[in-house]
Image (tube, rainbow, N blue to C red; front, side, top):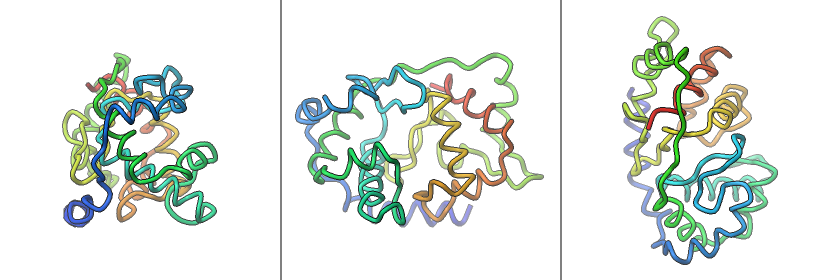
Length: 207
């Protein structure tokens, strides 16, 4: 919990450096190239691509910066994805702010939680697993999965289960390393395949 609190303080102090004044109308025009994967309003029709609609603008900006950094560093810094890092590379700070303003102003379509994972998913998300040293997801993402804009913790409610599953697996394997203080890597390292499957499906209907 001390690491989480410290991350919030540090991120709150630096978030203003990433937040240019975004223009949602300009972002809509610039988002045309994003629509193929993320949908015209940020509600991706394909599970492997995240829904961006309603996501915190601060988080979208952070991830675009990290993806651009991943391209510039050859995958040694930030967050590297073959497709998204290439897309983020030519974006200016203003482009990122405009895109973030547009997508954050949209409404996420959301999904549903299969009945067979509701109980286990709720228990793990809300309370973690003390015996295994797994903290509750709510510590950073809140009881509804809405995240925290100032700390740039993402809204994960209603997200595609396929995307959540992939990201948790990447954190667990250390293939994604742009989480503050390695918090997500520490948590994911303790998750089993079953845990990840349950959480990813549970979050789909948490909206």
